[in-house]
Image (cartoon, rainbow, N blue to C red):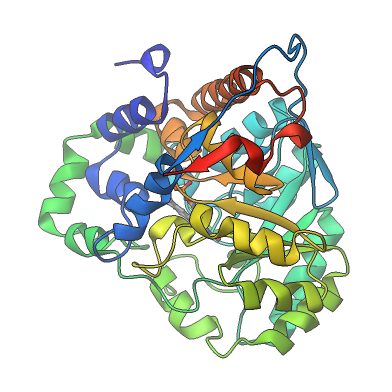
Length: 381
Ligand SMILES: Cc1cc2nc3c(=O)[nH]c(=O)nc-3n(C[C@H](O)[C@H](O)[C@H](O)COP(=O)(O)O)c2cc1C
């Protein structure tokens, strides 16, 4: 199987599965507990039907969107994800370059393996910085200031990870940073030697967003310990209001689900919220963002930009979310599997397919601009 045989999410996933050592594949593919929420994220789109209009003159279609002050050539962005260097040796560099080529936003995770500052210098396309809240308030301030100086466009505070999700696949394989592989997990690396060769012949693994401030290198601080020892589970609305003031720019909360929280986010000056359950990796049993979208848009959509992520695999999923009032939609595994499959060209192919599906879907819906998408053209089963 090769990249040119990949025509959709499932094909990229399959190619990634063949290329990656199984503990790494399962880290991407897996989710929390019974993975119910993870399955619901995509299933929720399947409970909604599109009702097209015809004969509307759709020769030219504009799929550009503006979200959080950023002009995007397509309404899909690459949501921040950790550890991309493990999925392909090009890591975040591949994702940033592909996002720039397709004129869309990419997010860099606090647990990213390439420096957000380097990526900012390299590419003009909108860049978000995904932030976790540390116990050390000075550290938070310094990190925000550093991101601001480097020209990051959007600050994205993840609020659904106040404690780690129960990822049982990782417990079975021993996936952790640094690696604590089980014997079975080690065997899986041995049978994928190409991955290991690429890994050791390229730049050393590091977490530059954190290395600047915290001793993560050489393994004294595992990611597990980083979460339990450095991050602050007492974070509350006053803390976030303070961060919003310090940042003084486009600031969104990633992982809002309730209407009450969406209203509070608007009140403290956030300019956007992302409905998200972290791809089902945190609270299993929680609602799918698409199911929750309409009521949140109705409550705050006139005050702040509402985005969503989770389970998006198709252009038609994006059209459904936009029809309910989302301003843009994030993807995670969709581009991670394509990254693992083939690096930058893989992500480019995934974004190209997504753009094509959105354009085709718009034409078939009888729409020439995203503003024409509305709830009138949706029916729920
Ligand atoms: C392997 C992996 C790593 C992730 N790392 C982060 C992260 O570091 N920070 C964060 O806010 N979200 C992270 N996410 C969540 C994504 O940003 C996004 O919310 C989620 O993947 C969307 O669901 P989808 O994968 O079904 O598209 C991660 C997701 C995956 C699959």
